[in-house]
Each structure stands twice: as C-alpha cells, then as structure tokens.
Length: 112
Image (cartoon, rainbow, N blue to C red; front, side):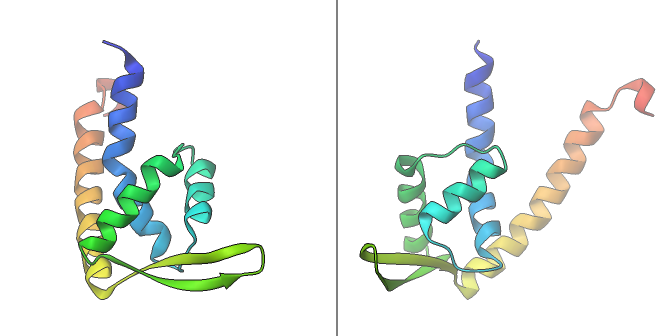
C-alpha cells in the first residue's frame, strides 16, 4: 500500500470543509481559493476544484455572482448561502468531534 494514496484520500475527505471555511469570511474567485488551499499545503488543481464548486452550488450551499474583469472574461465569485452557513456550522461540530476522537485514539502512553 502506498502512503501517497492514503494521504490523498485524507485530503479529499476534508476539501469540501476547507472550501466552505474559506468562503465563510468573504466571497472568492476560484484561483483565490486555490491559493489559500496551497498556502495551507492542501494542493488542489482546477480540475478538482471546479467540479466541487459546481456540486456545492447545485446543492445550494454556494452561490456565485459574475463580475466584469479588466483582464479578460467575466469572473464568478463564490459565496456561502444561508444553507451553506448552516451546513458549515454542522461540519465545524463534526470536525471538532472527529479531531478529538483522532487525538484520543492516537495518543500514546507517554502522552497521558
């Protein structure tokens, strides 16, 4: 078993949560989301991000608005909907519970 496969699956599992968390404070253009994810060491390519943004929009967790760009075609800026905010609150709670469970199960005797 290759460690890279497991690492990749772990990252994919939290990507949706991270994207929603990025958008909780301000709307963002997809390339800005990618920059923030890369800064956090979550390497994501456009081919992964765009389908996820579309899925989140189709489930009414995200919305977007078009803005004219001086450097090319109009841009989509994504933001959370009210439903997305409520969903993120639930994910925050789930993440805290999951992180606590992982800490407890990975704790060694010397940590006690």
